[in-house]
Image (cartoon, one colour):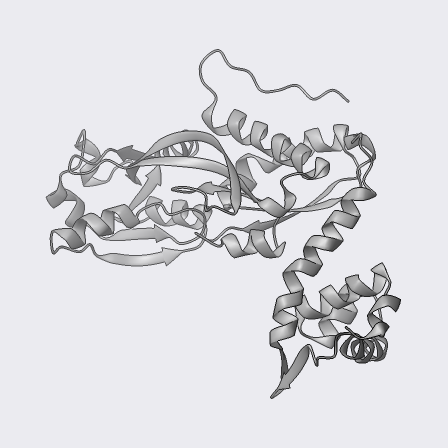
Length: 316
């Protein structure tokens, strides 16, 4: 390797990791708080040090060279290890100043975030949260660092990820309270197919099991509308004949706040498992360990509290 490599500082290696990850000088400059011209000079030095272009222009964009691809993940790991060396062995939420990125549905945002933030203000007042809508199976967001953890319905966690089960639930069919099917104790296949349907696209996978069952029997439902938010779906079913597949614990909450009801399906039963899930790269971080436990306890308490259980108490 070129002797120029020996002169690269840890700060420069962080710059290199950002350039390889973002693959855009302007965006990397914004993230690092540096000028684009300074990053151009850094890139020239990195190319000399590694004897490789690293970033190759293709049209108006950059792509990684083969050497750049080889360097990216090892470089991230080295920088994470160096950061861990400087992390205090004793972690205190009261002095943590980190901004965590959390993903979930708008239902999580509505029913869990308010109490979570109230407790956070007392135990970790300098911690901030970026909440983002979770899309089914977007584990690459956790791998890239776009989000630190996700709360969602997941069949199982992939090998590179860790997860903790919040609770279990079953799928039910939700509708307005005066819907003709509300008089039924459970819905037959024929009744289910006689009416139009609505689907919530964000969050975990709530109803593909129904479509898989129907395909197996050469049937299909009339899917009239797909929306990204639980709140929008609730508004729609109250004013239409549409049916909506939903986890039972959410349907029960809706019954308390709106003129809707729910019924189980007679022809298929599907259990859900709710997880807090994170990537291996954050598994050993003291800050991340604290935050995911904090989120887990609030999710567990808000959604799946059993009779006799109580929410955790967070002292000031």
